[in-house]
Each structure stands twice: as structure tokens, then as C-alpha cells.
Image (cartoon, rainbow, N blue to C red; front, side, top):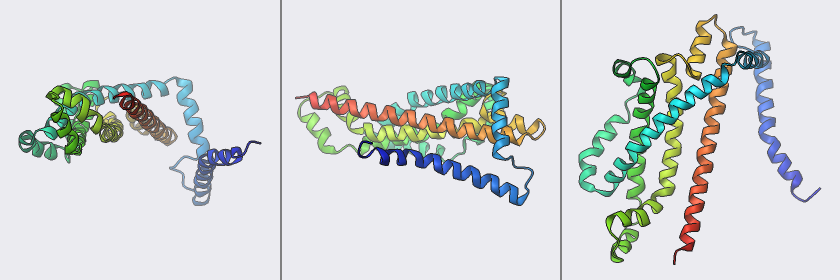
Length: 261
């Protein structure tokens, strides 16, 4: 066996051992306490099989991903330019930043009555809720990313005669990129949290709707826990995709930087 292979196998097996331990503890706790309202792991597994057999599980996952994608992209399209402006211009920051700070603590669910009034019950309402939840934190992340760029970089660019657009593309954006990508990753997590809550009230599809519908249709808590399980798995997958994309972007930026004279 090659040196280090056993160590890598052990490290790879540790998360699975932790999962098995949690499932065993869950089952043993239910057996000892005789709790009936919480399903046992085997019942949840059968519930997952039922959702797959009915062909509705992936339909709900895709519906949730569809809303998150559009809400998040809309927030990126609006929040990044505004955040860059607030980070670059002190005058714009003094005029607009207080209102962004005012919007950020408002719970996205507080917007739900107005969202349904404006957009009705459907995808548009959920997309708006995701947008309103994602835009303020992403704006502040972009603003702080620009502000944290060392002034010596900006001054060097100006000394070389770079115009404002070229200064932004060659200096500000590459220097702010790590903090900006980190903010986008956190905001995507917020979007996923919000879509599940919005789907419990404003639409008739998605993982949030699956949970509410399973509870209302005969207290099927095995399906409720199955829905929660796939919310966690899908959110984890989204986070990993975003983290991998961020690493590739930063790696490419370093390669491009190395090629510059």
C-alpha cells in the first residue's frame, strides 16, 4: 500500500462514520423514549423512496433552484454596481449607505404580504423575496471589498495614467475579488434559506412547499424530515459549487497576474 494511502482512507471515512453514529443515536433515542411523532431513520428512508417513486422529489428541488437562481442573479446584477459605487464614492456612500443598512435587518418574510400583493402567488413573488433578502448584504459586501483595496494600489494606477474604467478593471476589481466572492458565497446561502421559507407561503411547488404539504396531508413527518434532509443536501451542494467556482476564478486571476509584465 503506498505511503499515506491509509491516512487518506481514514480521513475520507471519518465523515461517513460520523453520519452513521448520528443515525444510530437518532434511532436509539427514539426507541428508548418511545416518541411517536418523530420518524425513525428507516421511515425517512422509505419516505425518500416514496418521493422518488412518485417522481416529485426532483421536481421540487428544481423548482427551488429555479427561484434561487433568478433571485440571486437579479441581486448580483443590482447590488454589485451599487456596492462598487458606494465603495468608490464617499458622497454616494453618505447619501445611500444608511438606507442599505436600514433595509438589511428587515426580515425577508416581512416583505411577503407586499410581495404577494404586487406579484401574486407564484414564482415572481418568491424571486422578489430572494432578491430583497440578498441585495442588501451583497451591496455591503461589494462596498467593503472596494473600500479595503489598499490606497497604494489605486494611487499607483493613477500615477500610470489609467482612466477610471481601466483603473476599475485592472486594479479595483482584481484586488476586491477575494472578499467579493466570499460575500457572494454567503449571500447565496441566505438566498437558499429564504426560498424555503417563501415556498411555505407563496407557491405550490419547491422543497418548502413539500414540507408544508406533507404536514397538512396527514402529518407525514417522514416526508417532512425527508424534505429537510434534501434542503440541507442541496444547500451544501450549492455552497460547494460556489466555493469551487471562487477557487477557480481566483486561481485564474493569479495566473493572469503572473503573465503581466
